[in-house]
Amino acid sequence: MKKANGNRIILVEDSAIITRDLKHNLTSFGYNVISTFQDGEDFLATESQLEYDFIIMDIYLAKELNGVETIEKLYKTKHKPVLFLTGTTEKKIIDRAKALNPLGYLLKPYTAMQLQITFEMALQKLKIDKELRKHKVHLEEIIKERTKELYLAKEKAEKSEKLKTAFLHNMSHEIRTPLNAIIGFTELLINPKISEDKKTEFVNYIQNSTSSLLSLVDNVWQLSHIQIGEFVPVISKCYVNQIIDEIQIKIKKQAHQEKKKIEIKIQKFAKEPDFFVYSDPTIIKRIILNLASNAVKYTINGSVSISYKQIEKSLIINIIDTGIGIAKDKLEVIFDLFYKIDGNSEKLFRGAGLGLALAKSLVDSIDGEINVSSEINIGSKFTVKIPLKDNNNTHIQKQENFAIIHSNEQQKDIFENFLSFHHLKYSFFSHSNDFFKLHESGITYSSVIINVLNKKDGLTILKRITQIEKKPVILLLQYEFLEYFTTNCESTEKNYFIIKPIEEEQLIKIFKQLNFI
Image 1 (tube, helix red, strand yellow):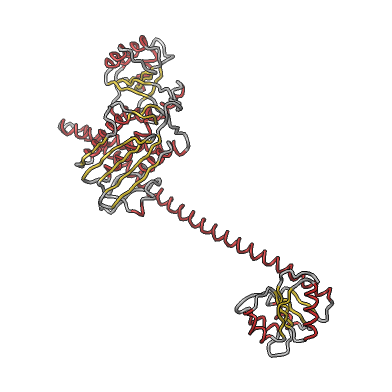
Image 2 (tube, rainbow, N blue to C red):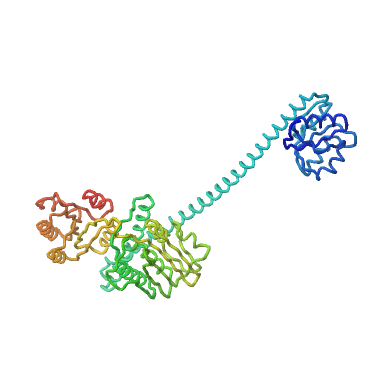
């Protein structure tokens, strides 16, 4: 006799002789017959108390319930694999049995070989069915998970589309508003009846509108460069106190322009003006400026404070405001691109939804961390942790230095943003005499940029510079001046011309040509 293989079988057969024969053969094949029944009623009354794996069921039984009806009743509460035993081939009975999806049929009379083959094939089918059910469940789980992922992706895409649409509306508004101001106040300046005081006021409006436009374009430009991987941090000495002082001036000016009486509080970790750390100064400046500017925008009254401290090899920066606050359920999305803080205030706040996204991208670019805590109508606190570099094992890039002569405020902003972005040093000179005095003290520059105000003076400055500096000179001039300079310059080999108004593509082309970027 073979050792039982673990398949526990129940026999339901009204013939005692066939039952003994089935039990004997199945046991000899190595199977375990745990119980036998002569009718369906007795089987149904007892089977719940038994632990079994398989049923061999005679279709025709002595009492009221036949084998098919017995299994039909069983399947209302549970499903167990069944092999029907029958002496009939009546189509009606067979069709009814087939509807129960049995593992097979064994026709009486049968031989031991037929019993073994039929039962083993039934077990093989059972094994395959179990595998199929297992794979079906697994597949259903995968489909469920993929459906969930697709639904979330769909929701995210729809949300992104809504944000992009809102962003385009915001951008349109943010561009049109300052442009309309520039156009409107420019037309008013032409009016001869306007007083000088009014003209000065209108010029201030125009300058503010120009700065607003430039800041918007600069945010878009920097963010796009980061996203396509063209922005690489450059480590150098970062004079933190000088950056804080510069930002303080900018946000005070912003608060004044927005007609807000906000107290700007500054708390410096180091008192020395020349305190520095090794990091990317352009990135740190931009992060603090974006967060502080955002704080001023959303603070109607109260204060905005900027503080920093150095803890071991990290620079911790805190920007705290008493503004409108941010709802707790919005804290996870405020750094998303195009997202705009609305708060519960009825006041509408300008902005394209780029400032915080850019700040987060810049923090990520130097492996930093940014966190925020906030309460509605109480204010917000942004904390930035920036890992500092060690001068002993960090490559400090040599920076080019530029002198810019006669730049107006608009050009100053353009060059400041462009040169800072490319980590280039620069100095502005309102008059050429200031430049020449500094040159006499031994200060030299990689290149000199001259904003040509008139032909004669511009040519005089150019000739004097070329006598003392064998460095390239970039001239910003009107198109009608171009022929005059190319005709009167002794040598144009180291002279480069940019036709006003200045376009970024022109700057990039010349600076790449000179290997400055």
